[in-house]
Length: 400
Image 1 (cartoon, rainbow, N blue to C red):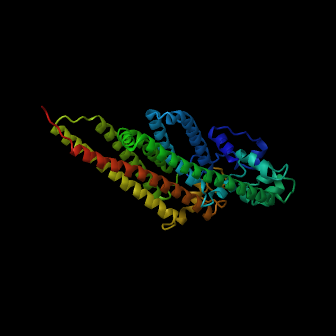
Image 2: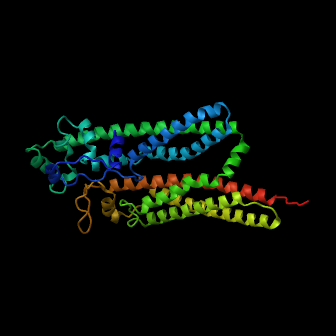
């Protein structure tokens, strides 16, 4: 249902509203949900792309696996290595433990991009009038009843019609997201079983050599992921890092982690092509391996810090600054539902403190999920570093 709405906004296509509607309700025609951690429809969109890539890869790998083609099988193995963590991240995001879906529907209800949802759930012929009454009446009205009377010929049932439609839309979308989450979980299990069987077919030594010779490829996902998450948390127009100081530091540590992963990938390239022909070159390579291990160890510490900090906020061990809730609401609100964000001090009566908590805790949950995924990447890479150090230490160089 809302996948099409997300794509419409993502591609920039929004149907223009007429002048009369815009004057009566200036809170409309704002951006819907952007690519943020609390946009559940974006996870469905990502899963659609991920599983389409998986479908194509399975079709191409079928013959390679049947014919025991090692090259094709190894390529398919790398596709699974790449897609599996993305699938896990999106699957966890779809289980809406904080009910952030209710916040989205409630505050974006009168947006033009939700017209299809209103047409489906509202009473007949009310989708673009009575059913789209803004929360608390919007900017130019004291409450919903006043809006309804002035905009709909003295009608007084707008709020009841809207609330009934919203409840139905919330229930339907929750079912949709949960079903997609369960389906994603089943696919994760199938991908994991396929990966284990594939590695058994390829044999462990070949798999290990492939990983060791492709460290930059292995680290590409956490590199891109760390920089992307740091950008989302600190530079997007919905960032609240200036209001929640720990969020600024989390974003900064993400950037640091991305830099450390990048340094590790560069060192992996150097180690791959650095040949050892004498004792001095062996000592140089040992030194490079030690630097590589130290780099990945610092990455582990950075990912652990992000995970623990994000988890503490998600579990409410550390609480958000309540004095900034209204300003946080103004920053998170992308639909223009807040009516006091241009005042001093900023206020947003449309957003409750509970709404702000739900969105913020969902952001922290997704941050903790990504940090855990990147931690696993760093652990596997660190293990490779110790194996490589042991291997280089046993080099025997003799000349006849």
